[in-house]
Image: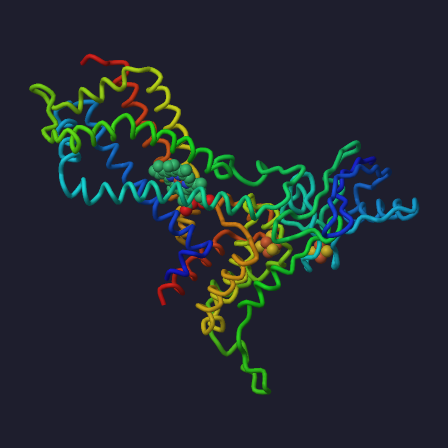
Length: 225
Length: 247
Ligand code: HEM
Ligand code: SF4
Ligand code: FES
């Protein structure tokens, strides 16, 4: 088994598994965030649950961090190995004749997502850790109210941040436009090459990032509700 | 038609090569691409220069020897053909055509446009075979029932001629389409089952050892492959390796 994950195919399977987990997580994250559009209370309660439930905090969160780190580290490793495998470059190479731009540039869309994740950690995750585990404030309260919704609205006041979010999610959409079906193909599921799954992949890669963008824009344009 | 050719010239494996410009005139649109190369070489020989070395053998798309990267595409701009089946009618008077060897660290240039594809042979030797009793009591192949579907898919996989266009065109120089086809042609048939697990393990191990890259599923190989080998063969190889790992 350990030999398997050292092989080129094993690495791809591991890459696809981590990607599946990330795509699943993205849906959960979206489901929580989207409540902020219509109910500050529900968003607050879900955020508080996610932020304090020990199963989420000490069970799921480490898996998520491992999944993210594994995915981009493996992405870099594969990229480096592939560059070595190429050798001399062509004087003229017409990649557009036989493959999509996104499929050939997963590392660049990935790098933008990584930059976003770093920004996201600085924005939300580090202050969250600081409040909860350094300052020891597990109440989730700010004055008489839950603090989560306020923090969210406050963050989306800055147009630069909103711009960065929008760009990042467009690139996430491009990453997934190839990645969704690619992950199935890597797992040996040829259904990834059938119409139905391609359509699901297309829908996923457009709808999920678009809704994240809608949330950011909504709070940016309606900061005081 | 009159053409300008930009061709990779490299004296030998250790020499540093470069692109060199040539002119060829009065090329008929009915000529094959390799016949056009023959015209160029005749011209060079007459001028006392070294002809351009390129691989070819059958010149009818079945041997897998020809191998040119033409205007940025493996086997040129046409689909479902090898370089020897490419016709000059795909080009027009005054065109500049760039001609390069297959590029991959695992396919080093031997001379000009000729690359060393022995890595494919070594992958085949690592597992691309079945054990049959050949000591006088060979079994009739037709005594084993095989479904039409499996037979068709195995036959499709077996049409791979080992030309290496899939590697040449891959942005990662991955050999997975070739190896996927070679694994599949046996994995689909009852005769291939005995060695199935070892076959896929050993062939993939040899592929990695030769320094081919990883598959990003861009699908470029399938588009450029002269035999239309399907990406499904790569998925099957992945399944076969997973099965072998669990065993
Ligand atoms: C953290 C920054 C990220 C980087 C640097 C990155 C990089 C990469 C790279 C280089 C590949 C192609 C690997 C290959 O050669 O096959 C890839 C594939 C993929 N990525 Fe990412 N990625 C990142 C984040 C994400 C996220 C957040 C998701 C999903 C929510 C995701 C989903 C996928 C999928 C589905 C694939 C296809 C997997 C496969 O072909 O088996 N990636 N990523
Ligand atoms: S899979 Fe296609 S491109 Fe690759 S070696 Fe076989 S015939 Fe050539
Ligand atoms: S020379 Fe035999 S396939 Fe082209």
